[in-house]
Amino acid sequence: MTRARAMAGMAALVLACSGCAGKEVVPAEEARTLVERGRKAARAGDYRTAMEFYSRAVAEDPEFAEAYNERGKSSVQLRLAPGEEPGQDVRICEENALTDFTIAVQKNPSYADAYFNRAMVLASRAQYKLAVEDLLSAIRFNPQDPDSHRWLGTLYELKFEDRLLSAMDHYEKYVDLGGTDPVIREKVRVWKESRRAASAIPQAARKPATPEDERKAAEMHARAMELLGMPDKTEAVQMLENLLSTYGNTKYVQEKMSALQAVISTFKKRGAPK
Image 1: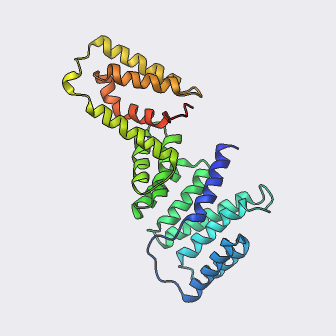
Image 2: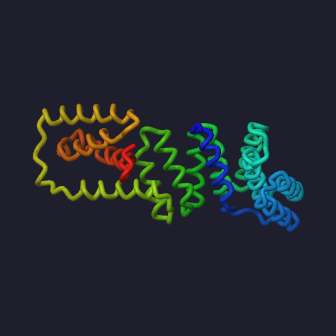
Image 3: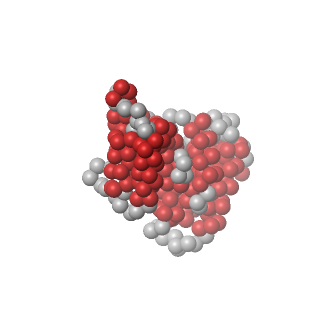
């Protein structure tokens, strides 16, 4: 399975669980009823019927942002639903979903879930910068949602080489908010331990670095970065840890300390070297 397809499956899964955060104008009673009927159909896996109810809700109340968001979610679910032909109308479903999520945030600019949902579709289409922007908006309007922090951290880690520190910040927030993913929790644990270990080294114990130390630190760092390109990250992680312990007193390492700790915590998994 390709990463893009895996991201698409992830999008469908998380969209199924997202709610309806954000404030909006109170919709017409009939429109609310139609949306609830649509949700009931969606829970039963009948996404086409659900979309019919959502479309009727939009016709009843064109300003009802939640109806657009729910219809967009069903469009995403429909393309991956059992019984649907593989690839059938996939592009159309994606475009319809993006259109509905966009209308939802236009109708309600503080609609966190619509930003989140649009980000999931954008990420599945490898539009990572736009996905990050939407996740940042989702967090701005609903900072207590762990999933937004989780997927923003994932995008930063996997798709933006210079954002590992930001990835760890959002992973840490995800865990603080009750996130339970074991892989992310382990990354955060290692990240916190590495920070504590670095801060525990007495300044007096750090001998002054020589120009030769600075040169060797730069060489070791360059070699470790080359090794990170290998499938097995074990040797790279060990070399980075050795870099911190041996040349942590150098200006070269001090300037990169947080980034190096982030790399170590990202790839160091207990009992799983790869």
